[in-house]
Image 1: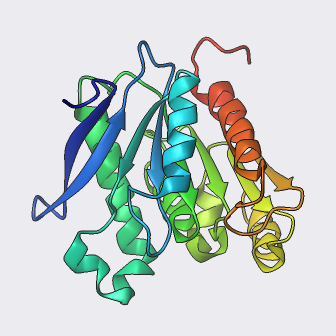
Image 2: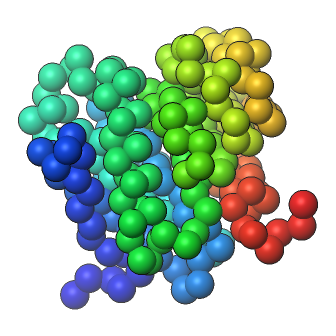
Image 3: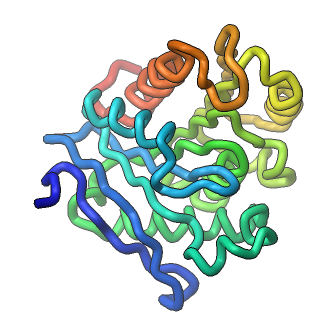
Length: 220
């Protein structure tokens, strides 16, 4: 029997030609919704994103984990790094959330990892009315390129201290963001935040950011 708080959903994209599998995490009376955009070579089954989603659910936030590509599409590596395509898929997820009665009333945040962070930021620039906050975990926001100045929502970039190249790229990308932007560096962490306690620090930063910007009852 399926856990009533974790619900299988299906998101249509490409004018109905593509159906993407998703999992909606729905705690009782959620204060907001976080949509995940996974990185290259990953899926909604990513253990790290799954862990973060579970912790956000425990903190009272709904989550949507979904596959940005079908299995056939993912076999073509060009699709895996096609930020424009991935951003459109995030846009399809935003449209789904806006139309589903379980989520339509919730403010929405995007949580992107690796290349998924670029897709999340580009989607935020393209859909300013449907996104209220963005968090990047070990992301490549630089790949969003010209879309960065168009991001209008508060954005947090979380990077491991020892992920030196990505940290440099994040700091460079932050200079192109005109929105409320903060960079959180997790001490001693590498790209995948495998070190003891590193992913818990990601959870803490993300939870605080999303609670601040998605909860309509939170103090300004």
